[in-house]
Image (cartoon, rainbow, N blue to C red; front, side, top):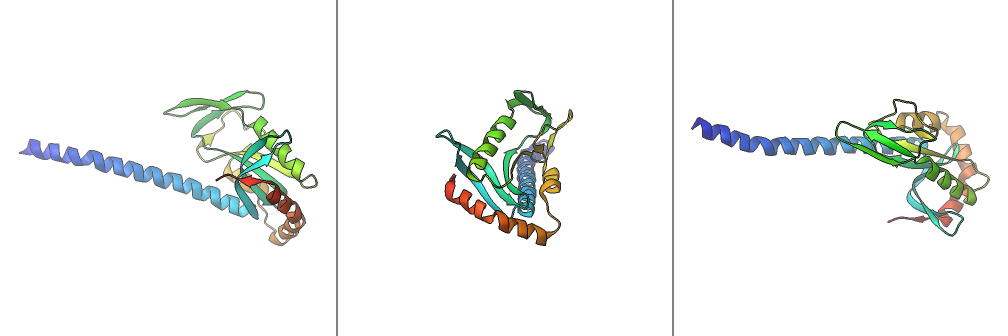
Length: 188
């Protein structure tokens, strides 16, 4: 009888543990997404998600997020890497090492330079900046490359404490933002 009870409790234990694990992963992912959205809402007065802009060579470039900020136009390329990231300005491939995985990806900086150049072709009189944004969970132990940041650094760099002054700057950038909106197409 005790062997039956032990077997029955083990049978129920595995599904319960799996359900709890899935719930925890969903909760963790949603919190990261919420943090991203809060920061984007704080620094961006208007935003276009998932857009395609002409690259000037009869092609197109995809952009994750384009934000109208008090400092001009900001292009964000999102990287969701968990673990230690080894990358530098001069490395062609960057590596992520976590407890479970090791993988490489192309240095995202050259593509970001192309995105900045494409947007500058549309709005020549407005400052255009770009950042490769690593979400929480990425750690650069050997130094952070140029134009790479996390959410906290992004907020510190592009956040505006004087909302009245920021609004005046936004109004000056507004006609250029509207030109971008007319020029780009959004991905579905």
